[in-house]
Image (cartoon, rainbow, N blue to C red; front, side):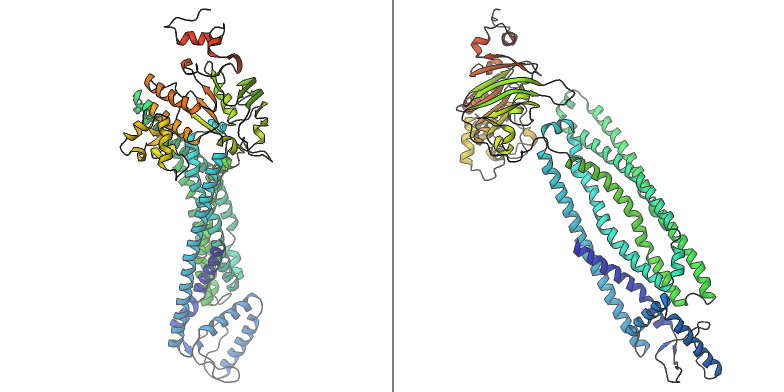
Length: 633
């Protein structure tokens, strides 16, 4: 960015220099060579004929000429003071640099100077554009990375509240909108003001009176630009929200395409998508309308100023006042050269407003504080040796809702398998989510070997856990990389035993490329049972101390369930396990069964004793095995 600013300053100076040397160029081509004499009667240097009325000499000897010379000297002495003096000094310095004994030599030197200025100007322009692109795209890369990193730090509750498509839109579309703002804020807002300043300096040096006249309409231009900018920000926010709706609908439709086709709802989804694209189309039109309004208004106002200067200044030149013709020509050229950066500054406010609207949406994510973080002084969790203890644990998803769990007391001993059963919505999944610290309890505490989970690092806790859920998530990658998730150099001779223990090796070998077969998004090329066995192989390879199974076999057919259950049994040997299951046949081998209903533990024991009790467990058992002899009450 610093290098870009230096190049911008060089570009601005060379741009003004091209305007300043335009006058000597015209004078060299079209001026008249005269032999001037100073007051001592000596021949003067090569110069331009002085126009009548400007206090110059006639070029003829005699008394009238001597009077003209005296008047010219008096005028030049007067011009040496104030802004006019600065103007004349700069003109003389420029002429001294360019002027040579003959017109031919002067023209050659002037061409070389102009060539050097143009080369420096264009090299500076290229370098500042490249360096700005490097800077702004680097900022966008870092912003997108930070946004993605922050999303991983946020708790599950945030993702339950936000739409997936909305988050995708913020990471992709909204961040790109900010890109234009960075270019505007750090590029246009640096380069164009520099150009305006150097051109304005030329205007003030040539004639501060005409410059003040040209700035009369500046407050009106600023008022128009700021008014348009405020409306543009609102329109840009609406456009970005419409794009988020589009992205969400597209993501949901692709993810749920099986349901869409099963219910023959293609026409319904197409109609919904068309309505959203129409809404987005209207927001874009409003955005374009507001975006393009400031530029013509600024240009019209600038043209009015330019024409006013042309009329007023031209009259002054014709009447022989204020400016010499060549100075007025330079003034007018500098004035219209300043119009382009002024026009760009009129546009930059609009681009910044669009970017601010996008930044509001992006930083609303970045400013969301993670609910689950490491406490100050958190320590790594040692290996589990004794127990997991839930002590009077209460949890609410929000302050307005009823408790999802209330006064839960539970101890899971090391190496024990505890099955959690009960009606849907009773709090089983919430309980294991608290053990994995996806959430923190709103009351009570959860301890592992006496250490509160909030006093240990989240990473060390999750490293000791393996989780297999009903909705298995596989990535659009090879079987090998899905099993060895996150470890890129895992050898196949370590992956294959894990797959074999999960009853997955046989079907993997039958895939087109074996362990190097790509599974497609979410593993759509595999059956439900195959996906479950891949997930179990992933957990086996991780070799965790604590296992959580959340309805891992509930959606499988009998054959697949048997294969998966065998893999689960192998995986649970010697490990502490929490198993959630609706199918009571899958929990009969558990060391203990805990019945959870309405956020409370209502029963606890082994399967054989619980079916004999007159409680909820026996009712659930009889409902599932109604075609068999029910247990008598």
